[in-house]
Length: 347
Image: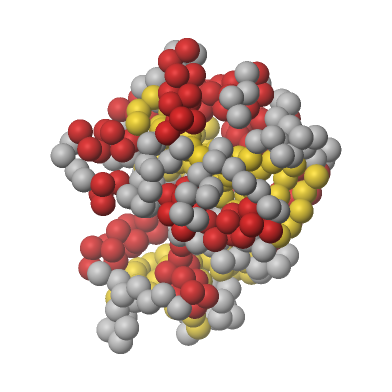
């Protein structure tokens, strides 16, 4: 059954570390795994391309990086997303008190492990003891207990907690891994298009790799389908087994015709859904409050040359090692994607 496949693959993939900026070992693992299904894979800069018999028909995008820490020497560690963004893209991000507290709460008392970025070998395991703000540069610095040896600079540190499937809920660091499990199940059940699995989504740069791939391959499409998780504080979308759609984010409008087709298909299949931007605007928020997404950046930075729509699965406890969604959400998320990509394709 697709649900069992998605859960098993999510749990399996979470056992392979993929801290943002150090995803290479996981990319190679995924490449081998998809090849076992008889699929073609190609590792590009920032992209794992996976394709079946009709690669030009449909393009689905998902992400393969996760949050973690990076060693900066002297037994100190930084939040990987901020460190990589500053180091690779020269974008400074002073940490506010509110952000420091938010980051600290995500990692407080977590068991983590250091790994070699090229072969995935575990180098050490420890527990995060505290997070403090550097007085010198206002950066969040983490300290670890039980790591006796100072890790080499730039060593990635991943969550050690495993995912759990119990009482109708899947819990773990499931963003972005659950979408990879969905894509595996789609290919296994007859999807014949292309999946673009990108790095650096957690630092807002995955759109660069996707647009570079589209440009290099001379792809002219406004029917990209981006699948992802969608964070919520309130439990209603998870409790009611919804899928989440969007007309737009703060950066750009998506393909309205494609989005409407997806809404119509949800109604035809009796799949409950929420349009997140409409929900936010109904609460009195404005367009700048809608958040930034990969697809919005693609549309914005290509002046609309490339566009598409997005289907998301709602989760609670976002960006922690106990992010949660329900079996009903997974069932509906997969059922919708299977219908529009395999059973009765709309693209």
